[in-house]
Length: 356
Image (tube, rainbow, N blue to C red; front, side, top):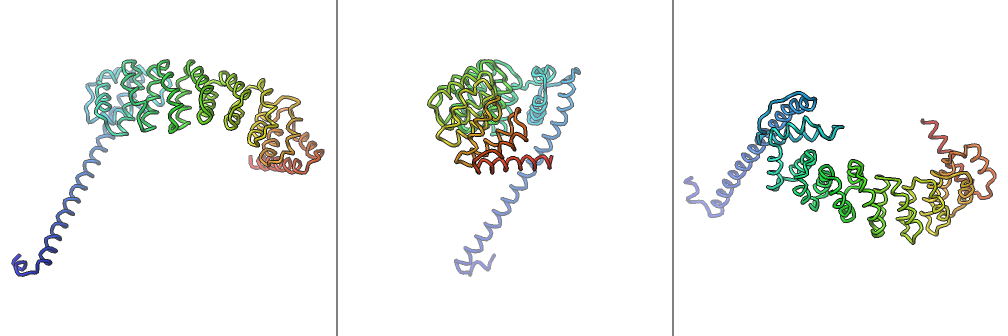
């Protein structure tokens, strides 16, 4: 490097800067290659463990005796993948064979280690799910602390696990969280409610729906109707008889299933808000009894297109009204908007029938 002796300072600086950049690039490339190899090695080990434990767990689930030792740390991720997968497809919640293997390999110890040492997001979800499948009441408090987790996925997994471990205790914690957690997926909440099938759940949801504000109450009514349409009926009647929010009224109309409650629906065909009139017409179309067709015929002249459209559809859905009768109603109706909308839904029905 004698040429640097007489070189200008700028050239010397540029030379050494280039050397440093090249060295750092080589270091970064080496780190990337090493990390890739580590990742590939972990992936291969995960698949190996999953394949090995799948054979053992499936055999145990079928009732075969198995001889296993403590679960090595390197096999935890593969074991948990198979453990959770088999439980997800298991009709028998007891899963005696799987539980026997979990106890023999010391699964609890590994799950506690993941949760107590704040493992990554994916590890937490998998560990909480696995604890739920163990259904051990001693784990309830350990799982419950994740119910307030800022991640909606982690908190929902915790809610489901608590429902599996101790449904009566979990219900009183789960319903307030439904009210509070607007970030929870409604589909996931419905799935947990249906899976839990706790008699206490309908009562808790009923009370919460009647006490909730206008923003939360529609969600609770939908969940209640999913869990127990019978328990939802008195709540819906109470809401429709009150000065409830329009959106809440519309939600009640959408989930109503009891034809005996139609007396609270018929007056809503004259509601000042068009979307309430629309839902009322759709509800009568689903649940209406002879005589209700006259109410729908009158509503075919509504000023709002969507009200006329849902009313015409409802008229066609009434089981005691056939298509020739609808055509007669169309021909005899004095309002041209009513005739147009009936032509529209009759054409839709014909088109749907042609493609069926």
